[in-house]
Image 1 (tube, rainbow, N blue to C red):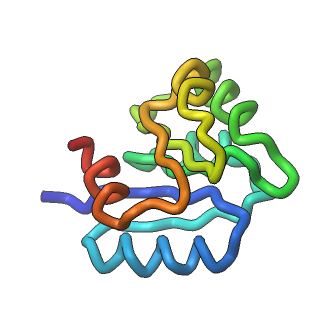
Image 2 (image 1 turned 180 degrees about the vertical axis):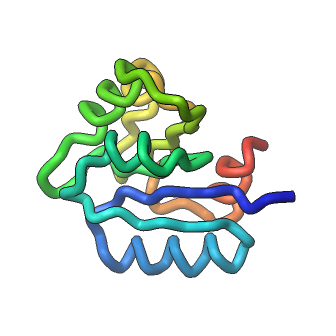
Length: 117
């Protein structure tokens, strides 16, 4: 089975490093984006299986990015899982997210969500 491609959009460098280490250990192909990048273009260009994105990025709003992803015509079928330290699950799902995980989360919960369990 091919490795799931996970793209991470997170502005906390420590969290990015932890996620990259964890996900690679679990067999995922991981790409971490600079939180100031054009995330919609990156998703469109690379077509990851999953985009794991923080709601509150340093200079961008994850919900606005999610809206742009939902409106754009992409050849990808990327699932978007939002993360936040605030419980904004309902808002994320209303914007079209495929899932939400509240920080801090247990690694097993994240892995299950990424695998679609």
